[in-house]
Image (cartoon, rainbow, N blue to C red):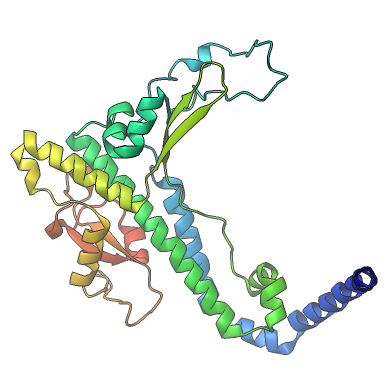
Length: 311
C-alpha cells in the first residue's frame, strides 16, 4: 500500500512543479507585483548602495595578523608518502605551507586549547607592541563593520519582502528569484574571520589533533586587552590609550544618541540606518582609539570621509 502511494506521489510531483511555476510567472507578471515593486524602488536602491559599500569594506579591510614560521620555506621542497602501508588506510598529512597553521607537538596543541591567546601571540609572532595593537584594533573595526553591514542588509531584505508581501509559496520556493525581480542586488558577502590553527600529525600520519582560534569580535576584544595590558607594564604612556573594542563602539554610539555627528541623521529617523564609529583624527595620521577621538557616523558620511583630517 505504501509503495502504491509513493508511486502515485512521484507521478503527480512533475505536474505539481509545472503548476507552481505557472502560478509564479503569473504573480511576477501581475499588476499587483509591479505596483509594489515601484513603491519600494527607493528602498531597493538604498539597499543596493549598502551592498556595494559592504563589498568595499570586505575588499579593503585587512583580515590577517601574524604568521607561523614552521612552513615559511615549505614551498622549496616536495612531499611524498612512500610508506608501503598506504593501502591499509588514508594518512593524515601536515599542512606545512599554510601561514595560519602552526605544526607542533601534541602538548602544544593541548596547551593552545587551554590558553589560546598566549600561544597565538607566541607562535604567530603577534608581539605586544603599539604597532601590533593598532593592527589588531584595525582588524576589529573591519570585522565589526562587516558584521554590522551584513546584519543590516539582512534586515533590509526582510523589510522589502514584508513591504511587498508576496504569496507564501513565492517566499518559500522562489525567494532568490523574487529578490532579483524586485531589483535587489543579493551578495554572498560573509565575514572572513581569520582562523589560526595548531596542528599535530603523528610521524606515520595515523593520528592528528588540531586546536583552532577564530578571531571573531569576542576573541579580538580579548586580544586587544591582553596586548594593551602587556604594553602598559613596559610603557606607562600606553595606559592612556583607550581600547577599541565592541564595548567601546557601543558606548560611543550611545553617547552620540545613535546619531551621525556629520549629517545629524539618526536611527530614530531611519530605523535601519547603518552607523559606524570613526576616528576623528585617522589612525594613519596618528589618531588614537581614545573616546575623545571617536565619533558616530552614518555609512554615507564615513564612506566619503576616508582618512581626511577634520577641517
